[in-house]
Length: 168
Image (tube, rainbow, N blue to C red; front, side, top):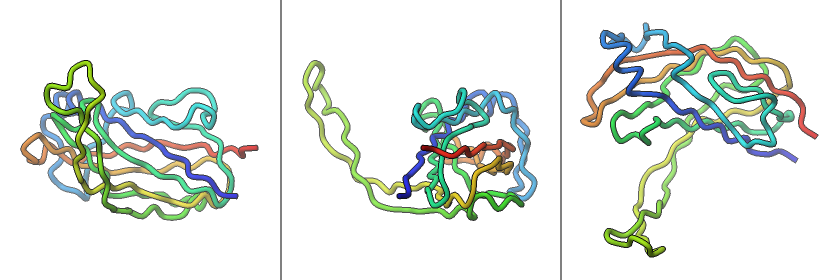
């Protein structure tokens, strides 16, 4: 039976913007980013070793990997959006973007010490790929960084690998 492997990518967007003030404005020639500024993780029982800019996890063929991106400030100062995936490897299918509606609970204003909330509708998205076989996948993800006014701070890339080991 296939399972979903949810992978969270967290970008240290403030540090990226500060470290790369002259980042590329060309989506086809993005600036390479230091791996120390990007973190990936998934469920603890799926991780092999530790999580970080590289991720080793357990998955079986026909499992589905879903990547979601955010920033350490939860997109309040900067927003990071993946826009391209490149790999010559055949361990996973080519990722596709999935967009859907969602509802998010937020605390009601003034509800301190009370579990009171209201909801907010939004459009959600993630990148999804099928696991074809186990092994190590080296790839490049391209992302854009937008400031709080949705102005481009730059186009970036990093080249992580994911090791897919068979789960029991």
